Length: 564
Image (tube, rainbow, N blue to C red; front, side, top):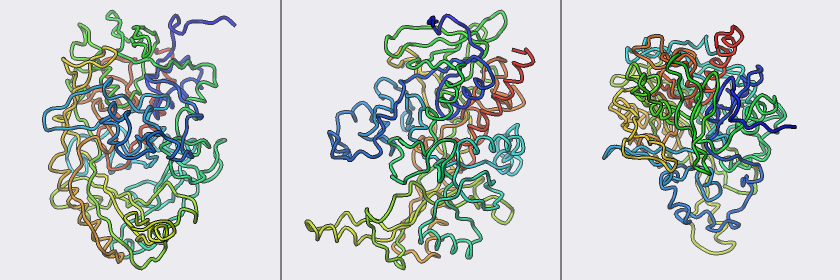
């Protein structure tokens, strides 16, 4: 077999990023027969490095909070619950990957550079948006409607769910459309009680979280065995991560070439045709600058990274960045607002926590949005809404005193705890934006981002309401010693970056069209969270994947018609 340098040939499509959307783009296009180059800024990953079953005593620093020299290179990444001594090298080195923020406006950009990206550590909650979200502007007059409706995306939600495997329960609630579900995980007795109380007293829906974790054998992957440490990998592939599903399928076709350590800097253009010819990237190891060619360029690098590439792709014809004739590229940054909620104890449940009594369910409950869904639920002082993620279970009393058997027994005298945390809509505002910092570059010499975002008055009022209603529901369920949180966390903490290249029908008020194609350049696409018009309050990854599949099917048809 004669080896051919992947950089000496031209491809049908370059896909930048191998995470949730990039994996789907590579799979969909390669299985349709297109020649695909899949570029990943980080290294490859192997199941041999998964540590979900590894005890802490085998680690150098025992995974003790605050311990470890590695933390010095990841001061921002360690704000993420999933970045630990077990897996910190999956996350970026903050010193090599800087960005700037204005004084007094912190933004926590938590990111990974490895094949699969954040699908290796994501929270896996998988919800559909509804027309309450896609057509939110028509409901309350704020912002813009999406150029697509739920009906447009529904068949692609179906396709993604049937492949990925989403466990959950149908509820018949219009605010959160039902999908194609594997059997749901079981609620705890406290959660069942809470669900029944909330339905009876408030008419609200509490459901088991809809999660990309298998509860039965599915597409060659095993059911979850409930070890509970999903952020450290999954040797049975029971949760969805792209390296062992979509990327694997793409490579299996023989039509997809994976290039790792390819840090993309910019999209290259032919000024004579105003079409992209490929991308320039820096080899992450050698620091050499290289170029790869293709008929189309698809950015799935994650919303902020994709927008950074476009902003850095300047030329005489695109002086403000590629796709920025509207001046809106980088504008409208969103990240779900978090921070509010309530917690308490359910004294009527006497269960004692026991690490040996059964498996740990890496899942919880979800309270479906109930604010501003109709005239009857309209809030007086804010628009849009929120949902709650939470759980109820017996927890250990780690503040116990004593030694040996006495300590073990004291630890088990914990309380039956219940907690709810809100995820609220983040309004798209043009004053929340990313731009290129003219004085800052990363370790590869690529200009870095400046991120300017704050949560506004609507988010503050929304979270005050969320805190109050969370406490109201816990009290109705008989909870005691209730604590309430109403402050909004700093932007970035939801790890749901959206917007910055929003879709729309009008090139003057949007960056991409309904198929994620740049209005200004017909063979460049932004198929990730960058295209979102509004955020909803639901976790966005399922919607990102469905949007990607829809856009890829459109692109495949264009290839069939020889339009590219």
